[in-house]
View 1 (tube, helix red, strand yellow):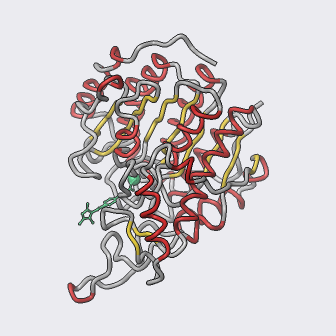
View 2: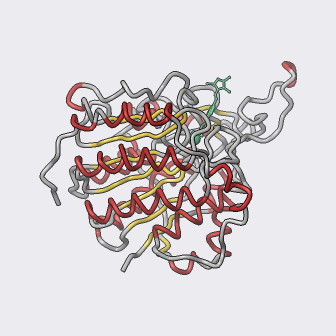
View 3: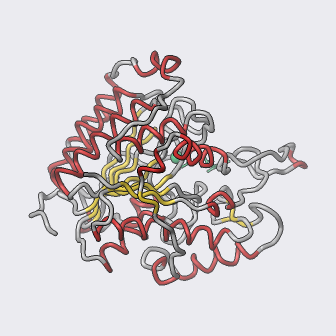
Length: 380
Ligand code: 9RB
Ligand code: ZN
């Protein structure tokens, strides 16, 4: 019997990214007309509403988030960076008046507390999993986290929600080995950097090659120092879809997890590898996410009592992200609803695109690094 936890809070939708023209801060003088930031509440609101309207919400264990404390955040982030976000968040110049560091990561008035609620939501979810109250779970949070490093926000991310949760699990809940799978379309550079020299946290990122951050996430980035071998990257060519991602799961992600034998799997769950996403050029469908989730749930069942905890990351199509997220969450909860992907017929041709030699080559290159992962005596 599976119990699936679900974390959501209206405040996540109140994180105000302001009037950017998609990615770019509005600047009328330079001809950049104010519009709406691409990382806005709409896709996330529609995910939550579909989870509710489909009836799935009633089958989940709702878990209330709390704000991560400064002590919890500084397991990952520097004191100065946490203070920087707090200061930026106190500016009152309108939505997204502050910035987390790279000039493209808006901090709205009050976003510090909301970002703490996002990280704290992940903490509550992993705690429930380790205590056995839930088997697996999904935190539908904003702002996202996977680009944030110890001392810089970037790519719309303020605090690295997953990294904060991973460190909390190790420090407070007694689990030793944590695997982070990141299938967001963009490289999980922040998570990789935070755990780069640490063999107790295996990071695996599948992403569109050289998309965001630029020139980041190549296969030769494989961990440093004691962590050598414990960071894996699969930089898939633009246009990769169902066949490429499933091959990467089969050839890299699952064998890496089997070798590593984690006590917990965390998932940086971006839906921006979906075929309608504006911020990447990958071609996954709701069926792809369903299939990939089934494989990951299987690995979690085999390796760590089913413990698989997902944090929402990217996913910017308000019209398609909800169906990808519903398929994902149905698989976690081992159930289905009456709602099926209404765009399935439209995307069938994309999904049928076969594996290319280029995709196969990069997946093969990553697979060659697997022997560097030491097989552990399973703990806990
Ligand atoms: C711009 C830059 C970005 C920023 C974030 C993303 C996606 C994030 C995500 C994509 C492109 C830079 C506009 C750098 O979904 N992560 O999961 N672009 N940022 N320079 N310029 C001019
Ligand atoms: Zn992304």
